[in-house]
Image 1 (cartoon, one colour):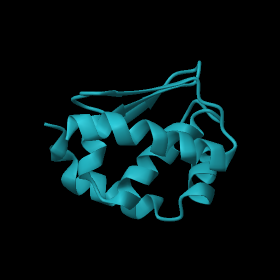
Image 2 (cartoon, rainbow, N blue to C red):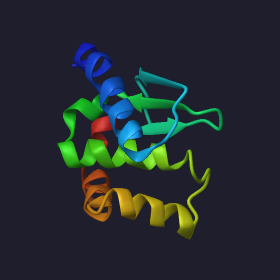
Image 3 (spheres, rainbow, N blue to C red):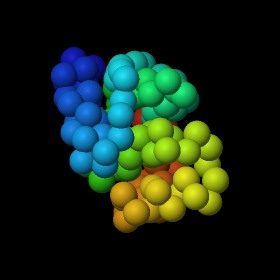
Length: 105
């Protein structure tokens, strides 16, 4: 699954970034223990390899969540407006993650 993640996730994220008009400097896939993803202020996005194990709508939400940090490096109301506009199922995806976040371990 880790190999599949390394092959699949960067291209998926970059496709979403293009569609949303967001610049990304680098995408890496790692074995993170407590996060599904991260975005640095320089545009580097890190994704948890376990994203290949979650439903498609959840994976897309996590990617959009990180991409929107390129517009807002916080979790302000404006940030969540960007997320909601790009990912109408964001609340459902958040619920899924809360219920199944144990996949990280």
